[in-house]
Length: 277
Ligand SMILES: Nc1ncnc2c1ncn2[C@@H]1O[C@H](COP(=O)(O)OP(=O)(O)O)[C@@H](O)[C@H]1O
Ligand SMILES: Cc1ncc(COP(=O)(O)O)c(C=O)c1O
Image (tube, rainbow, N blue to C red; front, side, top):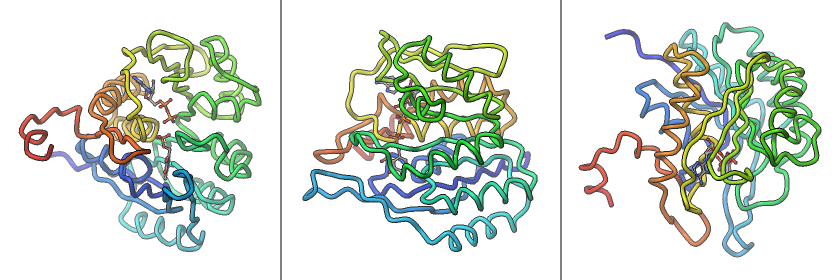
């Protein structure tokens, strides 16, 4: 057996299990890669506060020590970032990327949680743009995040996505895939990849569901695992799209607010479903 590929996620914890580092690790496992994590923040949702997401950042020094622990095991095949907790963590991460040989870097510029209107830690957006985009093999913003990174008020059409993608590439990312998802004014769930010269569209049927908590994290994690396994960017995005569509189709109502996607759905183990559901 060839050596197992190693993928690190630096992300927030979503104890409801669909998003955050939980989504990433489950996805890495489904891909047959080995997942590591460094926790940057802990997210909880409070029923008494209308299910508002509360974010508790982890001390940056502790985040640094977690990453150093993982790096002590040798070279990583991919690194994925999610919710980063603070500007300090973003600064540390950019230095760590420069000082270590990491081939594939997937920057998921998490700025919003589904069901919330306000930006989580708005000061992080500028730091992600300046410090992480130039180091990204691929950035994976959703429509809102693409607008924030590109300085475009609203991204809601394919043409808007193209404009935002051009801008994000000009900020230094090697590739960007903008997740059209449910928010796009289109019949299908369309994502747009731009590598600086060519646009590629990825389409899937829209799943009619509200249980898509974690879809964005899952998509970016799947891209990271695919790249770690040696896929080209185009193949990794295409495979991630299939994986995520399946995960959304397998989503379920967890409580009255959150419906997580199910990362195990792609491999449709019927026995697994019958056993646990
Ligand atoms: N209802 C849906 N049906 C099918 N695909 C979807 C649906 N919602 C989102 N997606 C896909 O899931 C992935 C994540 O998109 P999105 O949910 O917009 O990201 P985020 O979680 O970062 O907001 C993208 O590939 C998007 O096209
Ligand atoms: C820790 C964490 N990261 C990322 C996200 C973003 O999740 P999604 O993939 O649904 O955009 C969330 C949403 O709640 C979260 O709690």
